[in-house]
Length: 308
Image 1: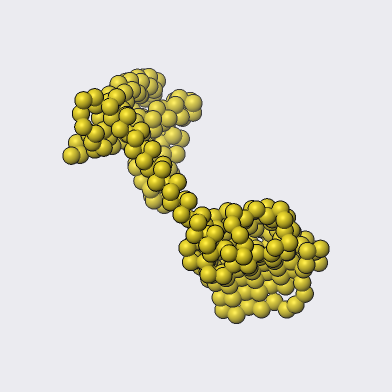
Image 2 (image 1 turned 45 degrees about the horizontal axis):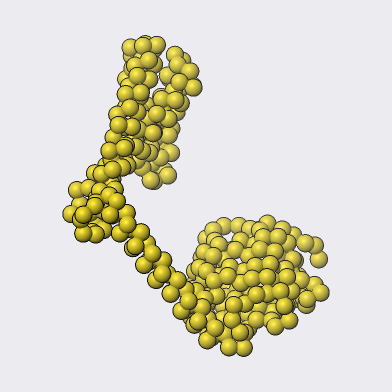
């Protein structure tokens, strides 16, 4: 049996994202046997995976098991990424060389079994598994720190959750007090009102950004004029089209639309580079981008100020 990089292997077995999304059950075993594939269920034998195993593209994975072959022959996977496997319900890790396991985002887990993982030092996020019904943790790993009694884990988890809720409440109370103190500084002699405080902070930010926007706009106009004086008159329109296209690219979230406008942008650049340097044109585009972003911030602040 030859060790293979874990991510290389998983991508060879499931080369497409769609293929990964179809998997509901995945079992990876170090010991011998015959691979079994039944619709959405996959069981692999004689697999020795080294390094990091990222399963985050397995969006519909419900059942995951990774097996070594005893504590003397660990599955050499050192890092397991499953934070985006939000449908995961059953997790079984046996004799695997993990040092930590993070479960903060796997809130659908009902069954968790950890056996023979002699190098596992911590499991994070167990208190955030509200549906956990079955927990088995190997009791021979003295390095593994669990913040509750393994024999009475349900009560231990409840206590952890209670402490977390109390901690969040303390943070909320502290933040509210800080907001009140801030309100006294910004709006003295006025009864605390979170809405008014937000408006006043937005107004202060607006007063700071508006002069910056005017300066940026002035600098952009200067750069445009400098370039236009050095090019032929029939190319001046291209400058305007270039900047309009840049604004369209920034304003669109659709990658296909952005790609289309980027093609137009490059075409305009090719024309203009006959009379202007790439550095000049890039500086112009950068300045335009800065101004657009600044104007967006100003528009947002003005909206916040106008809200009642």
